[in-house]
Length: 114
Image (cartoon, rainbow, N blue to C red; front, side):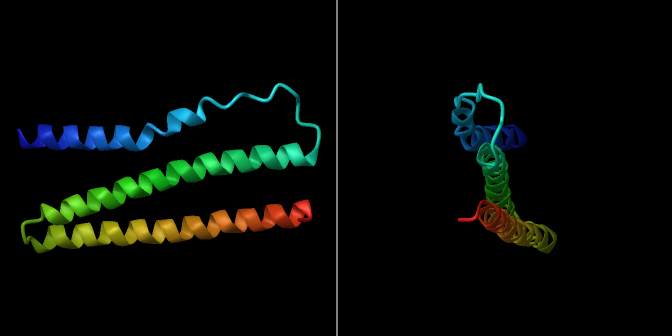
């Protein structure tokens, strides 16, 4: 019974986190072929934004899961260590993703000349 309720909570949390991605599917597909560098940069920027959104949603889910593991560790040192490691890995992943995202924005601005 406990594993069923845990799976149900995970499914609800995952669906609540992924639901906003459905709005990204509503954007119209460009009908004109890419002819200028501005259009190419806009397409690359859109793809990077979608990938970043998915990554940060997964990172938030991992942080929530690590917190859940920490709360349910019941004082077991192994479970506490595992939850702490998961939280550290998520924080490092978010930091690396922020640096990568800002670096791509910096390079795009440099190449566009603005």
